Length: 271
Image (cartoon, rainbow, N blue to C red; front, side, top):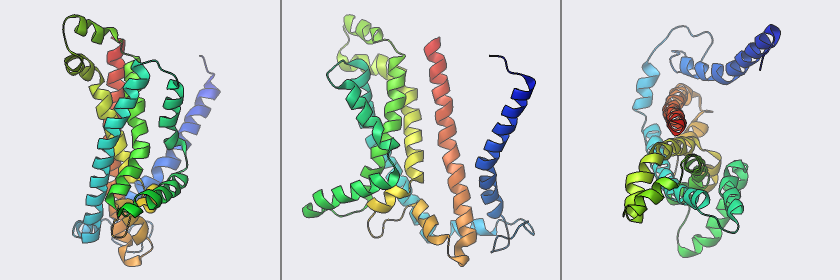
C-alpha cells in the first residue's frame, strides 16, 4: 500500500499525539515522585529521592504490595489451568457448542468491570456467605481469574491453531503415551505462549481495582486500592506518586516480556 507524503506526515503526527496522550501523564508521575515539594508544584524546584525512601518504609504500602502479589499469583495459577484446558478443548476437539464455549470464555474481558464486580459480589453473598465464607483474598483471586483466564486462553489457543496436531499423533504412533506426547512434544511448543499468558494475567490482576472493590472484604487492600484511598490525603500525596511510579514500572516488565515471547512464538511457528 502506497501512501502519499502528506498522508505519511499526517499519520506520524496522529501517532505522535496518541503516544503523547498515553505516555506524557505517566512520565509526569515519575517526575512528581522525585519532586521535593509535597504539593507537587510544577516545574519541580529540584529532584530528590526522599519520597522513595519514605515509600519503602511505609508499612501500608508494603502490605498492599504483598496482597497484590498474592492475588496476582493466585489468579494467574487459576487462569493457567482453566485457560489452558479451555484452549485445548476448543483447538484440538470438535464438539457441539464449541464456538459458544469459546465466546463464553472470552466474554468476561469485554464486560464492564463494574458489572462483573456487582455480579460476583451478589454471587459470593448468595453462595459463599451461607457456607461461612466471607469476602477476602479468596474472592479477590476468583474475581481476578474471571478475566485473567481470557488472556491465557487467547495466547494458548492461537499457538495451538498454528501448530499441527500431527506432531502429537506422530509421537503416539511411535509408542508415546498421551502424557508423554504432551510433555515431550506439545508442552515445548506452547511453553512460550503459556509464559506470555501468565505474565499478562499477572499484570492485569496486579493493576485491577474495579472488580477488587466489590470482591475484597474488610482488611484486604491491594496496591491499586491503597493508591486510590491515599491519593486524596495531602500528607500521602508524594508517597502515592512513588508507589504509582513503581506500579507503572512493574507493569511494563511483564507486558514487554510477554510481547517479546509472543513475537518469538509467531516467528518460530513460521519457520
